[in-house]
Image 1 (cartoon, rainbow, N blue to C red):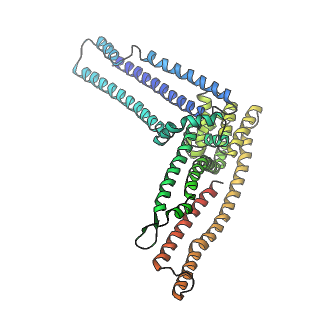
Image 2 (image 1 turned 30 degrees about the vertical axis):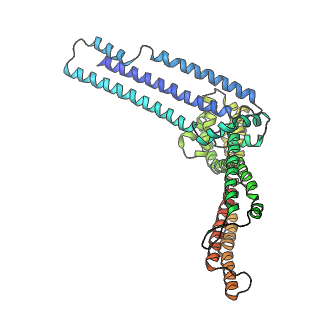
Image 3 (image 1 turned 120 degrees about the vertical axis):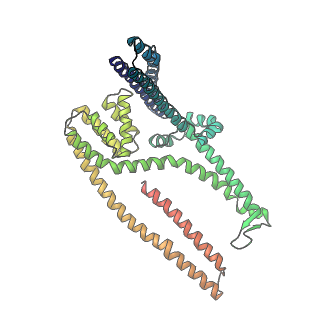
Length: 424
């Protein structure tokens, strides 16, 4: 029984070691992928050196797995136990069979976990839209990158949560513009030959095609411009959304950090506690990047704080991490630093909430005026004109359709405006 216990313990240690290696490889690959997206910034040499070091570390980890597994397979466990037990009673044989089954089940479980990780990576990598965009426009997008075009877009992309490399996203912009132009051409062609009216028949053929084409030529221009503009500004909107979410959590996270720092523990432990708490999901993402720089890259705390501050989408987070790096480097009081920053951040948070409350009241008045009062007055005006026979006389169904479409369009634009205002 002692031999079985020793072998099982040794096998568990083997599995734990392999699992640890696989997790390290996963973190290293994810970090290499992120670094390739910022390779052509001002700190290109530093990023290239980081990628080189991570690649070397990945190779060392790959070499360790065969050495660990060499000579330690399930038959080794079975053969050693058979040699150490010359006679098998019924109970021992049952224990041996149970141990063998448990070992096989454990191996299957580990393989299942690894396969799930591989499947997840495959799903993340294989974006059909991005794949098609790269297939058609990768060559041209690389030329644009080499010319240092779209520098502002590059910064926004790196600070957003979009998992795309910069050249790949340029391809997506070009592909989106092309698709928008195709859609515009289809709509333009349809409305050249047909028109839509509010009464039956809804679709009616057009008589003067040339005049109709001149009136609708704007569709061919507006659609591709809209496609380019939307895909271009989307990373900026995503970055601003991330910034707003981080700024909303940062005052309370800083208060927690100030309380934790009173225990005079290592500053790295402060970030680990905030991450493990799970109370601040958006702040957690930034602190996870920070811990990757320390644990995976091997940077010291000050360097890791500086790099994370540079890549953070939130200015307040960048200021906090940069100030913390200066405090640690100069040997300052961390508790006092966190308490001072927490007071400042909480004061800014309260002012912002008061401003948003007043703005919401203003928007409510505008919404009531534009979506409720104005359409009712306009509808009454059209009905009076129809009954009296003065001015434009429209059918009741046309007036109803105009009101429904008008209210719907106003609501859509109002929601877009609120979303953009929220990310300010």
